[in-house]
Figure 1: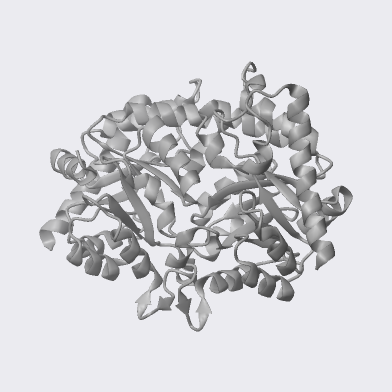
Figure 2 (figure 1 turned 90 degrees about the vertical axis):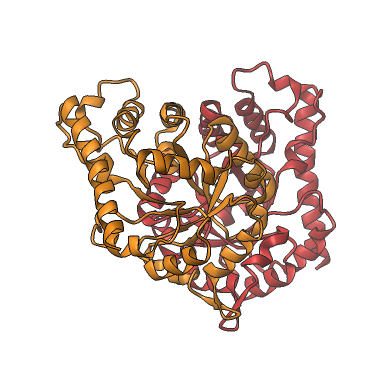
Length: 272
Length: 272
């Protein structure tokens, strides 16, 4: 099944466009997980267990797994395996390299670990995307307009009457088949998201930058004219239970934070 | 010691600007290594052992290690530990992310694995570099003008009278202290390398794209007006011994390919 098909199906079934960012930091997870051989792995599995019917999928920021060396590799593998097959599994790696290296990354994260999609940095141009697009059911999220302050250093430079990020979108979309190329837009760029999704309602978007900045959700939801956009929230969900919580409390808090997120999204939608 | 100091010292001691790219592929290494528990690790250690007095350093392309999962992590750690302390250890990861994620990468590859420098993709702007520049003795190689065909998709776009890669150089150099920001230029961009090194003779350069294209070396050497540029060669060195070689033959072939590389560089220098 094409990626967007899978995406629409799970969004509709779980009534959620929330992607939970598993940026799991060993120092921040509740004490109840520290007794396990691989605490990060058990923590992630517990988060998945209590949110698998109220989220669209999960995103793993590889920096957090690479930091843990062998234990991180094993946690990443366990985590991806624990995610139900019909949910979206995003590899947040921001890789971008020449074709034979990009092919190694595609083999690793698509074929070995079984992620559905991957974030890619476009600085090296089209070559960097090719290997990731050879697999029919997978998708690439190309960095377009990120939420960090220094995005203006490059992404907002103008060339030939266009912003640089618009050139990225142009050459990336020229390679797309079956909407297997999507984009990353920071949640603060509501105007640009409105413009983009109005023109490209079927192109998958990954929108990080929500969480602490809850105020933005209303504005953001007004700008999304697409059925294949997902919003990532990491810390606000996965660290919603206190460090010394019980298992029961953990389950309740994590689930509640995801459910609340969905409710907020819904209330914004209804007010549009 | 600042990175450029270390670089100059090893270049002068070993009379070499060669950085050997350890892009080690389990399927391509000689059979004699396959008996070991971690063949990639043993292969790399052997390459280092027979070239440690005829090269400036080593570069590990992380894609090849990530592909091998736990075994790759262990090979990477073993390999970096086997490189003599006064040689340069480059982490070729092309990471580029928001500040808290980049900090995780810096902790991982600088503090845990003890690499001296790392390649970084500049698409997200200055934020992506900050954490890597907090360590006095380390260096960042920012992607500037790469050797792949599709570099023109972004790097050669013009904005405000400048090529995009020139804007990257400008904002990156504005963050440099003690020449701890260097750049990646593909070996085919001799004109741009000449221009850059003439203006910035102390800025470290990492130049990949030599190997199969031996013809370029003469032209390239005429363009490098810097004492802190290194040239990477991967496959032409590490796969110079046949698959069924003996240990003795392996040692001789690998060493010979590095020595020949240095001779060719020297003859180009002398003819300038």
